[in-house]
Length: 415
Ligand code: LLP
Image (cartoon, rainbow, N blue to C red; front, side, top):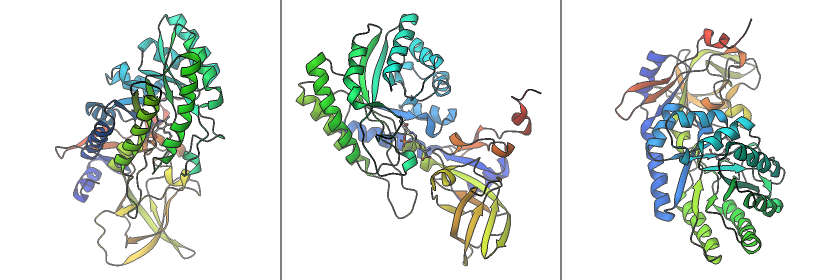
């Protein structure tokens, strides 16, 4: 994390707590690194940043400036990407249950790729495209029945999941698309889950894709121009573990894709990846102030001003984020539980965490909170969402989303 303690303190003086603080340098470096690795191992790689990880427009703008496209999963995300001036030809739209409005928006804007997930959806997209008199480029998101070893709430590619089309219907889907003059079959897509640390599941998925492609080539004479392997590249949330070596991911995945196509006598396709967490997780922290300290039945509680409405990963996935006391130099360490202000027993950021002794008023930083932090925040308990601040490359603090106010909380209500 590239944000010094003095900067954190300054940001808090200016914008209060709780507060999301992001490092522009970290975001840009991660974009550049990914692109360099992609270029080295698979030059025809298109990187579509998964907006859901963090859709702050100022951050997305930086990511696009660095040359990444967008992976969106809702009309709201598509609207944001287009508003930021991103070319539609750089946008991939995924989503298991898209509305007619969302499909129409994708069709009329002529986005790069719309990944469909059911035979029903193909019919609907076909009708919308015909009505709009536009041809739309489709990918088929397959459920290949590949299990990954990650938290069960963030695995998506197994047989029990709602995502993707059962791969046994793949040929039927491709046939339907190829037979409709308003649809163009461009790609095969899958997304196996999140927090993946080894390329092995991607390779397993690609082996299954290979036999589907062989069949589609032999029976329909059709091959796609794109293979979209989704996102999921893991990041380490602890000091003990390292981020995965993405050189290995790109080398292995790229190599496998090239091999599949060369066996079919075809040039390598474009490879799409959809990383979210990898780009932004480590670029962000959530800063919170300790309001009170109390001891309940032998447990020492830090009662802080950030809660599960601000950051839900620990409560939803049991995620353990590193937590630091800002300026915490006390030589004595104590064990603390960290509780938020929300009226739920689960609103606990950490249990029995060793920290340098803390006093009321101290600041703590929840690290690696840049991904799935603000984007999953809510107004639960009628709590205004925190502001988002960027620590720029020039060393300035720039407010990139203001704190919500009490009025904001009532602004949509009708009495
Ligand atoms: N593509 C698709 C189709 C996805 O569903 C996702 C994430 C991504 C790309 C980006 O995955 P990433 O590279 O960020 O792992 N809220 C959870 C994570 C849910 C991910 C959902 N899909 C968390 O906080 O861990």
